[in-house]
Structures are given as C-alpha cells and as structure tokens.
Image (tube, rainbow, N blue to C red; front, side):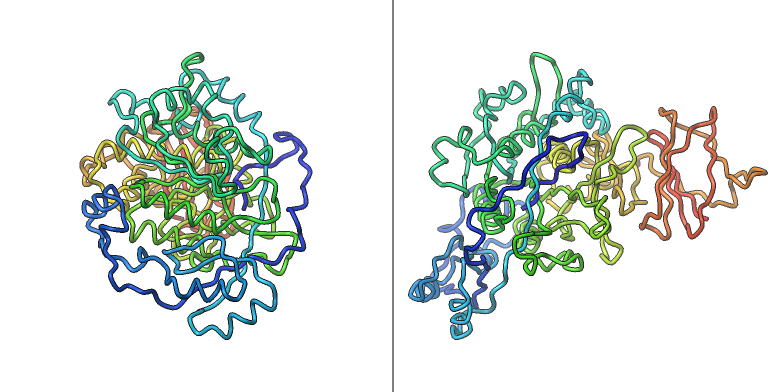
Length: 530
C-alpha cells in the first residue's frame, strides 16, 4: 500500500527499502464467492442502531445484500482444502487468502467460487520534518487552513461536533502524546480503534509500531483535528469531531500492501455509523512480483477491489470517502494516472497545491483523460504529499456537515465541489480547486444560494496587445502573481504557468493547441475561451 507522501531528496530522509517479510510466501488473493445464504437475515440483528438510523435518514435501503454475512458452508469448504482465510468482506462477498499454485487450481473445482484475483500494491514511507516546520512558520492557522478560509468555521462555532469521522491509515503511534491532539484525547473523542496489522496491539494501540511510518496516521489525524494550545496554531478544522481509527498497513512490509485489512476497516466503520472516511493510502505498483502490479489502464474506477468497495460506501452506505490523489504526478510512466481507490467515480479525490498562487504541486497525481469523470475532485496546500491535503478536506467536510447534518453524502460532495474556487471549470491538475468555508456553509444551508463564481470570457472580447498577448483587468486579487491552467479541452491541462501582475492587469499569451485557459488571481477565476 502506498502512503501518499511526497518523496524528494530535499524533503525527506533517505530511507532504505526493506525486504517485505518472506518474499517466498504464497501470493495473496481475493476469492470471490457466488451468492449468500439470505434466509433469516434481518438488518436490525446485524447492523448497529447508529447505522440503521443513518441509513433511514439518508433514504438508503436497510435490507442490503452486501450486509448479509458470507455463506458459512462455503468458508468451511475452503477450510477443508487447507485454505486459511485472512479477511472476509461482506460487501464484496469475498475472502482473502494466501494461495499456493495447487490451491489456486483447486478453486477451479469449487462451484461456489466465482474467481480469484491477486493483490497488487506498493508502499512508500517518509518523514514529516518540513511539513511541521511549515506550520510553525504560520501562526494562527496552518497554510492549508488559511487557503480554505477555515476562520469562517470558527466565527460560526463549527468544529465538526456531532460528526463521526473514520481514518484508515498506517500507525497512530503516540497520537495521544501530540500537543496538537491533546484536546481530542482529553475529551475522549476517539471512540474506538482497530488494529488489523496485529490484533494484540489493540490494547496498546498508540504505542506499538512496526516501522518509522507508523506515525503517519497521527499526522493525518492532526490535519483533521489539530490545535496546539501552546503555539495557538490550528492545523485541522474538525477539532470537535468523533473518531474511529484503523491501522491497516504493516510498516515492515513495504512491498506488500493490505487491501483486505483496508476493506475490513471500511465495513467496521460503516457498522459504527461513521459519516466521513479519510484514507491517505493508495494502491498502484509492487516490486517483489512485477506480474502482480496494477497497470496504468487499470486505474479506471472499477478494476480494484478497494475502489469497488469505496464506491459502494458512498452510493449504498451514504459514507463520504475522501482519498489522497497520490504522488505520481512526476512519474513519467504514471504521470496521467491516479492510484486506486482515488480513481473511483464516487469518492472525493484530493490533490495538492503549493504556495500562492497555488499551482499544482509537481508530485500531485494528475487525472487521466480517459476517465469520464473529473479527477482529482479538489486540492489544497501541502508541501509533503496528498497524504496531508486529503485530511484537511475531511475536517472541512465535517464542519460543513455539522452546519446541516441532514445532507446526504452526494449532497455534501456536491456542496464541497461547488464551493471551490474554479467551479464549474475543473481540470485534471487540481480538480475544482480549493473549497471555501463560507461558500460551503451557505450552500449547505441553502443549496440554491447565489455565490460569486468563475467568470467566463470570450478571447475576442479581451484586449490584444501589439506583442500578441492578451490582457485582463483585475477585479479582485490579493496575490502578486496569477496562476494559469492552459487546457486542450474543457478539463485536460497542457501546461500551468505563473504570470506576474502588471499593476491592475494580467498579461498572457495563448500556447499552441490550447482551447481554454483558466486564470486564477487570488479568489477570482476567469475562464478564457479561445
């Protein structure tokens, strides 16, 4: 599993890749089953009151096939063949297991087995040294919180109170010792934890770790709910939210991920009534057995088990799933592909921007042109990877949902996108841009609220200079530079460009092969149609 962190020589320590346990171990597969025994199944006996209440409010069916437990007879037959299952997924009607070639052949003789699919993943660790330094250099609100106008939440007493948020990540080592998370633990806002890497760790969830990246989840939590009372720096919007934390990645095994653990955590959080799930993990590549790697064309929103489960969580369970877009934007082979499950149509995928005027971070995953839906959906500031832009948006979403708890997940997702500065002119570099707290709260309370948005301009209405450049007079702007996204069509970017302002004017030219240019000046956006 890949943690969505930026890895650069300047930002991170040099980390040695360790051999993932026993590389000669049998490959891991998902075994998909045919049908279930639905006789006698009753939702009220299998789902928590919180989940039932949530689904009733959202208008979702209570009696869902995906909630029915797996057929016990099928599991017993697998066991009789010496197949030891690891995780059972009700949603996918599948179990995970390590299979020898002989066992794989035996599955062909079992009429209740639909198919077996191998796991494919790669995991990248990193440190967070520069990320913390950036926050300390920005008193009051962290840079991403300033970008999204989080101060508005504070002025209107919105801190995510009453909203249940789940985090699926690597370890949460010493999260309870972080000054910025002290309030979360003093007020008992962490309601439950799940350690799928080592069940024995559940009794000491915040101490045990298998590697250096087991503080990753702690840092993610800080970006959702952090506030340091000694420095008075706020790093997360949802300081009052309730949390369920799941550790699904084993830091010792850098070449093998834990898709099955991830799915188990999703189903556990659904049973607890979680409304928003943040996962700063992604799946794409693996090096120990290259034949099991995902291909770029499989980042299609449906090929992986995790993306199918993530989409189901949104559409069937009414859970907003927020996923980091990944950091392959600088990888030539994967430059225009986003790792799964960020490729899912229903999930909210989050990219990263840098300092004002907020260009796409060079590492941030770029949405594939082949997908019929926009990816990423949104972006926000992060120096060290989309791992830390996604949780900022998760905290943001919790505050918006607090403003109107009656919103369904699809309505909430719609509000977040419409509140972003580029909407409706999203692109595959930064999605619809970064959301604004004031706009989002107003839309949450009144979906048809009229808000200032992007302005469309025909190029033939612009002033053309002698040198062939075009000019826009600034109506609203706070930066000394404007960011331009040159696009070959409505959404796919050819290049991004920073242009210095000339007094009250922006001067720019049209590159070859460009049909549209999105001009971002502070909070004001212009969509130039060539």
